Image 1 (spheres, rainbow, N blue to C red):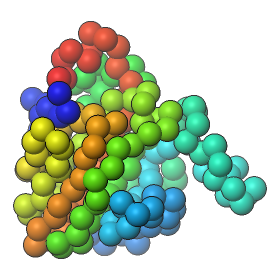
Image 2 (image 1 turned 180 degrees about the vertical axis):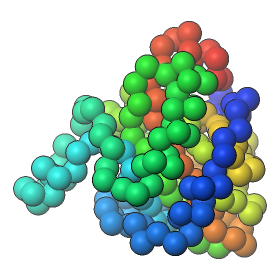
Image 3 (image 1 turned 90 degrees about the vertical axis):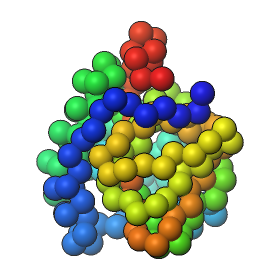
Length: 185
């Protein structure tokens, strides 16, 4: 199984409103590699990037670490959503949180994610804003509605095709035990 919809709907309206006017997009352009070249993102929680920026080298940023909340006015809007998902899936450890935006008719090319973080955590996709995107997998597509939460396997090939409007998604990474894993798939 590559993805599954959780029986959970979250209120994304306050976050969506804040994202309409923020200038926080793409402050950390680490993910601008080929498959992500059409999107912009906001890092809300991940490995502390400051030591890497000070030394001028991002090598090791994706190695094993404890994620921290980045200083952002979005944190008070994101935390309740992350905690709601954590409670729903009986999460044991909260990892990175990333918000991505694709322009109208934008795409994220086919790819599979790696690194320690991608392999250690389960990934949950929260639809913040959508007007017809498809989150594509080999075995099918996620066609989300705003507030939907989906578990997905990011180690499997996936891509995104957007339609007429902006597509904004939040990825929440959570470590769960084996019993919790059965609850969300």
